[in-house]
Image (cartoon, rainbow, N blue to C red):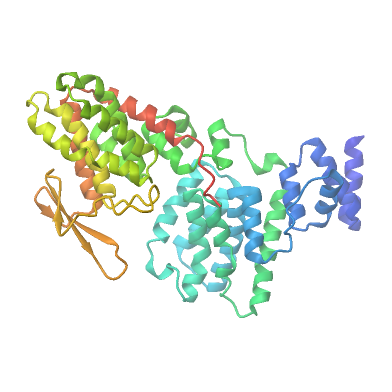
Length: 461
């Protein structure tokens, strides 16, 4: 009987355009669980007539900015309905921008297709496809933001890719915003309305779909990815570490097994700098019980301060505390008998990592009156660890530029130096008696738990 009533209402709505019948259909679908309230709210916010009537009848609250200027309207969508919805809006604009700009590059067209596929199925496999194409597109200098039609036409696609890779709805709303509407001959106001209509059409059609068509069945971790609580890149990191849930989420063959500990450790450098610091901190905690013969409290304090730095990476004060141990560790290693020296070298190399990650970290976030961490530097400096850091201040902006001489070689990049220090850390750990299995397990448990923790959302929008 209920099905017959629904069919009758659907017929009244579709054939006669009766908005009240359409509203009743949507209300019945919400009650039956074939339409989610967030989807109805989104359609109503986008001024879909029947959805507005249904939302009002159900007493659903809506943002009061349905007629806001275009940029603000996009931000309200991102803030109210999250990354997935914001990227869908950006993908609609990206397709139109490419069409208007006459772009015919397989990387850009592939990325916009990958974005659309990610919107339909925001799985780890689709994330990987987006990330690969985004990394290719962002390297193309002619698509960098600038006052050229080609840059404007490519902008929405690349910025939407950035939103998915960085798990940030702000970039999605930016991708679809007014800044990219310069491609076209119509008056600006007309172009903005065209884009608004594109976004409305795409989002309304998606918002009113049954939940089964919006999201296929997923594991708990996959659901957290879809909800934006964990990024695809975090899951890929956890899968590399060997976390079972992440390995199952990315699927077989998505992450290559790496039996060699040194190469396994080096791959952590592909992720943000906090990752290698957390791995080094995990290794230090594993090594602490073996430091008893050295009888030096310096190692315990160094381990604690590196852990604090890894947990609050952007704290200048934490950086100062960690780097303060480096020179004493070098001196302790020299004074330690050869048989016991590897255990000290683990700590020395671990504390060398933040030195090369960001030796110019300021403590302004903790103390506005403080200067640069190493403000006494002049010309050439170093900590006698086989490296010299050349500090030069260029131009009028006062930004420090570093040049490195390491192992007798000059001109090495930051990545090359960090790789060498990481290899020294692993070698010292193995020489001290720690086994590859213990090291992997310690890093996996610590860094993996951090990687799969919920994203901090306060800076996402």
